[in-house]
Image 1 (cartoon, rainbow, N blue to C red):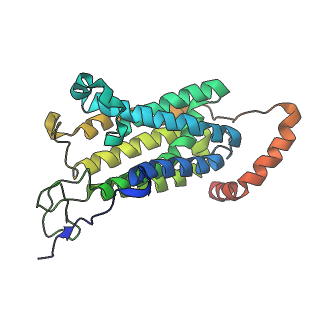
Image 2: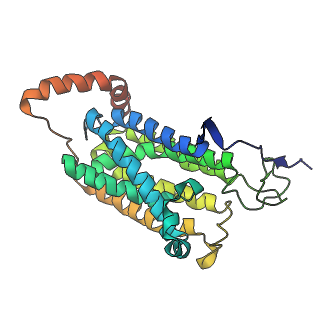
Amino acid sequence: MIPVLMFPQFNPVFVHFGPFSIRWYALSYIAGIVLGILLLRRLVISTPQVATIEQADDFLTWVTLGIIIGGRLGYVFFYQPGYYFSHPLAILEVWHGGMSFHGGALGVIIAMAFFTWRWKLNFLAFADRVTVTVPIGLGLGRLANFVNGELWGREAPASLPWAMIFPDGGMVPRHPSQLYEALTEGLLLFIVLYSASYKLSFRQHAGFLAGMFLVGYACARSFCEFFRQPDPFLGYLIGGATMGQLLCIPMFLAGSALMVYAWYMPPYAGISFPEESLIAKNEHIETENTEYTNPVKETEH
């Protein structure tokens, strides 16, 4: 029989600064947001252009607030409302953990709604470019969950080569479900969305890529939930489903409807610029977008 792997004793703290410390989990959020914005700078100016590079930079603050506030409140309302309603001050104790992707997604949607309203941008077209970047943060976050030794999987057969014993999971081999999620919700979903973003016909139908993200995430998360141990304070719910799977149902339905809606809507033409700065703006776009637009032309012919 293959020996069962023991979970490596990672230090959850990345670096100490006196009494302060930066944890891998916090670093994953920071890295995911920064890398996402860097990619968004390129995506927003691809044809049809949905925003300027300066607006993509400005979105950094909005998306950060949406993720943190939405993620925390989502965990409070979706997972442990009874506890937090009895201990409201504990809602602010984010350093103890407790973030929800579905809540973070709602927070980012609200942030995008206000941001696009402020700048008079097309909400769905902007959402298309933002959602392509989301799996970067998802993948890094799941890797941080693995480093922390949390959110481990269900019991696995000892013959599974990568079955692992986690410190808080008892002396039984378990699925490293955090890695499953990093590969599916992170790497695989990013490859699919990034590849799709190169196709002009997808980009022209505002909302199609955003719908594809919702459907893709719902499928990946629901699949991984079959290997992930449910939260002990929730357990299995209706029909043996987990909370994560139940929350993915409306995501899947909304994403499917959005893809159909976007496909039958007239193509989006992109943002317009003041006439006096149009020539200079076009020159700037061509310079920034040379590498990105060439593959589009090749795939469309």
